[in-house]
Length: 163
Image 1 (cartoon, rainbow, N blue to C red):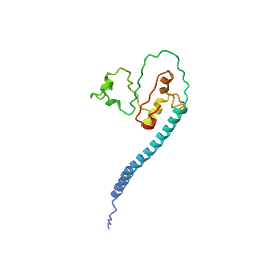
Image 2: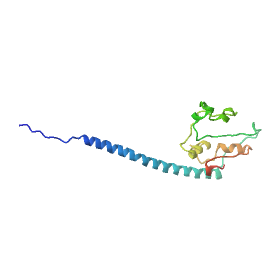
Image 3: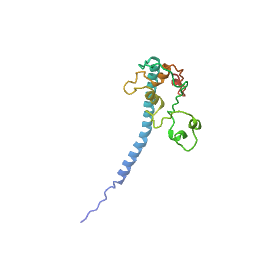
Image 4: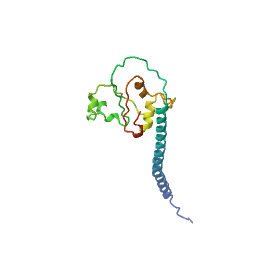
């Protein structure tokens, strides 16, 4: 005598596991986004506070040697929030930067932003030895003022728009 019985098909378990995996993956994305936003905002506020204290109380230890300046006017423009591959001054085929294409000056090619957002990027770029001593106050934007130039900081960053 032969007895046959039907076992339950286990295919639905695989589909259930796959569905559970997909749901967990999709549901974790909003959590990562919210966490990234909160962490990024907290880091930016902390950097803004440090930057404000540094600009008010930071003292650099650089000495500017006396001499005759080579130029009467120096303009430094940072385009921290723009990709160079969309700027015709760096070879983009559409004339997106006609003034820069004809302006005399030095254009830095190959610099990569040091952070994903403006405030940390500028802090790490402007402070000379940020990685070793982020509270040193040694910033390259103070050097022209120490050399006798009248300096201006123009920014669209609101609270950080004054030097």
